[in-house]
Each structure stands twice: as structure tokens, then as C-alpha cells.
Length: 283
Image 1 (cartoon, rainbow, N blue to C red):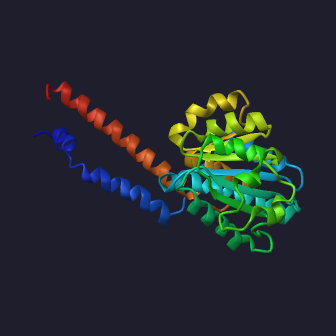
Image 2 (image 1 turned 45 degrees about the horizontal axis):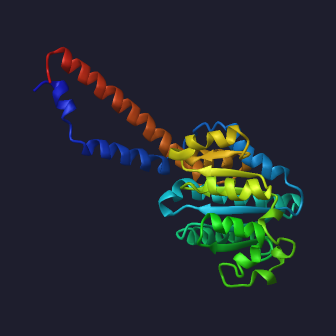
Image 3 (image 1 turned 90 degrees about the vertical axis):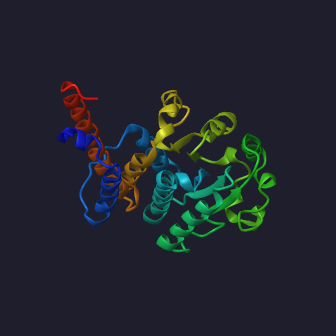
């Protein structure tokens, strides 16, 4: 057996070991990965920056734990940006969150708990600065209903507090009253919110989606049906850079960049070895 044949028959577990090293090393060794901010991500950031004082932002957390590595950092970065504006510039922005996915409530509770820990409950107070409605089943019918009468569709928040008694809903009767919406989705709910929410009720929206589905939403961005589009972990890292947030997306990009580099090298080497072996008449 020739040297090239031995390399081509190398146990695949060595590849798995290389992948593990590429993931572990960036956790131990910090190195800089250039993050180029795209106009799509900046579209979401700029819209939130430009909102009038005391505006309400709607978040829909339509994803599950399997998509958490990509979409949860976006959630934290957006919330961090909003509450930093409130703390540093006195913007008084409010956040109302909901999920159309039954797997979403735990992620929403965790995200708001993280904001309370970071900013304190004096700045991030449930019922006054934010509200989480939890999971509401019904898909597009829920979106339509929230645009007609929010308190009827969601008489209580996730924790059972009547929405009619929470200060955040004093002047918020439906999603017609929100200034902006960001949809964070692992499925096709972006289209649901555009078709049954943003268009009929007249509020602008942006979206954050998984990397594998991002390409399919560029027509919505190019046609200005959404103001911005964040795609995968890279989109989250771009938002962290814009908002100066110390999150998990930028460190995650180090591991992703190193892994991609190594895999490209492996693909090139294997193809070169294959060509060499074929030139010798091998199989």
C-alpha cells in the first residue's frame, strides 16, 4: 500500500479528533476573528437605535433548544441593546415577547432572567419594562388576534399576572401599537408575522434566522418587507459588535472560523491525494 493510499484510508476518528480540537482550543486560547458587519444586520440595530422614547418593541421567540446556539445569542444581544439604551440614554423602551412555538417559553424566561441579573430589577422590571406572554397556540390566528385585542388573546402573562393589571399594557391594546418587531425564528414563522402581522397592522419588523435558512429571506429584505436580517451565529456576532455586547456569539465565531479553516484544508488535501493516486492508476 502506497503512502497516499494509507492517508486516504486514515481512520475517520482522526477527523473527529481534529473537529474536537478546533472547538476546544478557542475556549482556552483567545484570538481575534474579524467580524464584518453587514447592512442586513445593521438594519435591525439602526431601527432600534432610531425608535422614539417610550416605544414598545415586540419580540417573537419562535425557536427551540436545537437552534439555541444561533438564535439565543441574538435574543440576548437585542435585549442587552434595548436595556443599555434605557440605562445610558433614558430611552424608556419597553419589550413585549411572545412565542408561537411550544418549546420557546423556557428560552424567553432564561433571556429575561439574564437581563435582570445584569441590569438589576430596578431597570428591568417585569410588568413595567418587559412582559413575556409565553406560548400562545394557534399560529397565524394568534398574530391576527393580537392585532385586534391583545388582552383578549393573552389575558395573563407567562406567570399568570393579568395583562390588564400590568403598567406596560396601559397604552398597548394590540400589536398595532408597537413601534417595531423582531422575529427570531427557526422555522417559517417569519412569513407568518409578515403576512398576518406587519403588513395588515402597519408595524415595521426585522428578523433573525438560522444560517441554513437565511438565504431564503433575502427577497423579503430586498423588497423592504423587513428592515434587517440576521443570519445564524455570524449575524448574532455582528449584532454583539454593533451593540458592544460581551456575549457568546463572537467567541463562538472563533471556533467556527478555525473549524471551517481546518475542514477546507482537509478537503483540499484529500482531493490532491485522490488525484495523485488516480494518476498512478490506483482506484
